[in-house]
Length: 283
Image 1: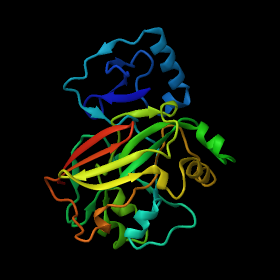
Image 2 (image 1 turned 90 degrees about the vertical axis):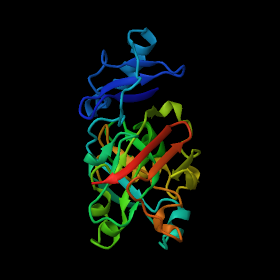
Image 3 (image 1 turned 60 degrees about the vertical axis):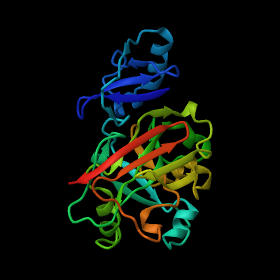
Image 4 (image 1 turned 135 degrees about the vertical axis):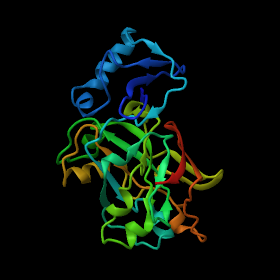
């Protein structure tokens, strides 16, 4: 299934995109795709409603697409998780996942405007595979158990301000948690539709110029490993989002460091997960 949320910020309605392009209203099953929805077995209820033909069709024309998950409790990010990205930034290949947190309020829709912070000179892009947790995960002891807690996958743009991130603090949070810095979506594609999350092509263009062209097969730590590792250190709750890292091609690692400016447009795509497009503007 492909879950999506339609409507203005704060007033989105849950919906479901079918393979034939029709969109169904999921409101008869849930008021939103939030933590409670996942914790209460909402995905199975939704599948039953689709099979039973009880969800009315809606016309999405003209409706904003919001992030596919409402109010995630936390956004956990993994840095330097692609060998080529670590190399381009001059970083050592990490022996264990590099973990940091991102303010959940940064999550916005896949086509929403992204704001360049005031006094920013080094705003950067990062196409990433996002994993959404479907059930509580703590102290998982195998890749199989880790895979069982995945609700689905989405595209994430882990927007970063490099000066804030690298020069202003020994931690990365300042450069990662600026408002609008995590476009997510357009869909949450359920795990059953992504048989191998380590075989997804991913691309990002800036003003029509291809900057990132990678594949999730090049992750240093794969998705089940990341979930299992994180579950040893924190409880992952339904609706939490994990950003799993970005391949080479970010502005920080390019010779001319072409950081984003107001008016720039960034387009992202991951195989099977849809597309995003954002225009950047001053905060």
